[in-house]
Length: 436
Image 1 (cartoon, rainbow, N blue to C red):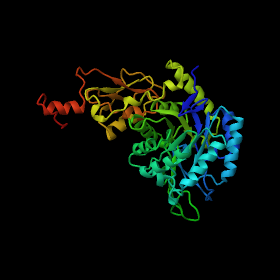
Image 2: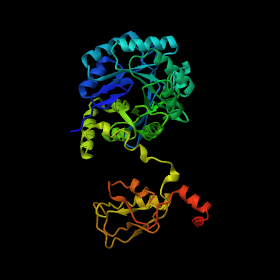
Image 3: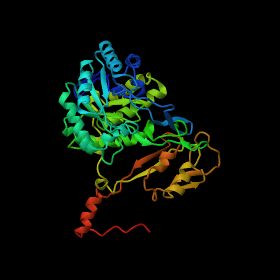
Image 4: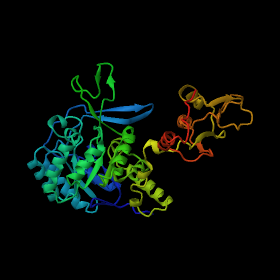
């Protein structure tokens, strides 16, 4: 069994799974429940001057019968006093000395940052997370994403924090920015010990067509909210990898954004995260999901011969390169397993109308009959000479592993777009004519 314990910027945790700063990390009661369930760390709901929240606060994006593929919120930071929050952090840390307890902070002045940083250390927190990402409410007060979207301002505030910090500082970055690495570099320059990303994305998930007001609404009005959940995972993975690959960042990363299974976590870790934070999935399914996460990650690491989760950190980072470095002569085509084909012919429709017309419908002679197939009904057949390997058919197919992409030899040497341009410029080859 692999060792799941981690050390991120000096913060130790029995496993990489942390409860993210948000509603599930609002009280000592919830932190106790999380650690009882098996979570390795808790990032406390952001502490600052108490706020007044509104009602209602959440809306969601559903997909078919799947609920909450995306969650929108207009909830602000903790509405409880700093005294209560710091007292409860001390209580939790005393009971769970080997688990990571992180104080998330958001205040305004240099003096207030110094005060809250010192209070975090005094109550026994293992580290501090600076909330530079809240996209609503707090940004209107000059905090949250108003800081995270301006690297120079973020750098200044991180430098204020580092003047008083005696425990590790994690800078939480906003995705509502053109280049997240600019903010990550600012955190590095100011002395931050780690970064976490992504915070929520500006969003409107739906409009109530009865009152013509976006959800959630408050007295007939609404506001843009922060978007999270499974739908944001691809954006989060991209930003995590960008920071992990940037030679001017080189900071430990706590990954956030749509994690709800061990596979999600493993992908974040492979792209550079040391810890992974979870919020929406807990709000949807509860704290007990961490048991499957730990078991699944352990089994995966064992299957790869890895003795520690730290061996997985960043393994996939170098495989992401600029498009012009990719091999133009590499080819994959689709292959159909007719023993699994159910005869829905969705692959044919998708390819015929939305891709490259590389699938034909032919008589079923010679093909196996998969489950649910109607005898005599035409079956899809790949036109191998026309298949460009776009993957669409395998993505729309409702049966796992019925359509697989298979690498085929082309007999041509590796040639990237950059190499191709160079050869044409040197007169070593003629430009490839466009498709008719």
